[in-house]
Length: 223
Ligand code: TIU
Image (cartoon, rainbow, N blue to C red; front, top):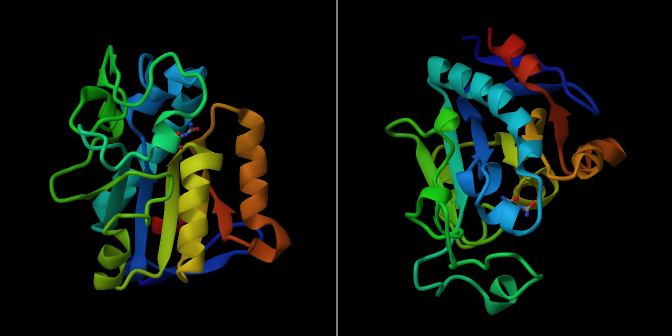
């Protein structure tokens, strides 16, 4: 593995030093990607997210093969809901609320089947899993400390959904000084137009929040 590579991205290519780069896979959980989970209870077509799984898996495999840092996140709450603000639980008119029993266990609750990461992207032994109560991966989690301890400066970001948890996390990371590269085909939204515009928002204005690249560009740079 070369020490560093020029990664093709928009609005401009960037130098990536692999030793200080982490792959961050946001919330690829059954609750968002499979029928019967949180995403579907909100009225969404969960099949919209499936397309991100394979490219995300390709980058995950390449990161594992190169021995690089992989971080998975999961959105969810404690069984007693003490970390779930009422404003979040009460929001909207879902068919099942956070904490209600569903076909994959209690909706968006840690330890339930629906809260777990999809089989194809399941964390390997030793990979970091960040449990988060919010949409952003920094709020009320150890992620900032984990990245600091390891000297990470650049994040390659994958996951769901583009405009919700990916965007919130990228915005939080950008303000903390991380270079964020969102991998377009490794992210997805229930709303394809939000996905497209969400990516535009990252890279507009000279890269106001970061960069947009793709799985194939990362694989090309790593190989
Ligand atoms: N609803 C929606 O689009 N997303 C979330 O609630 N969480 C994440 O994006 N992970």
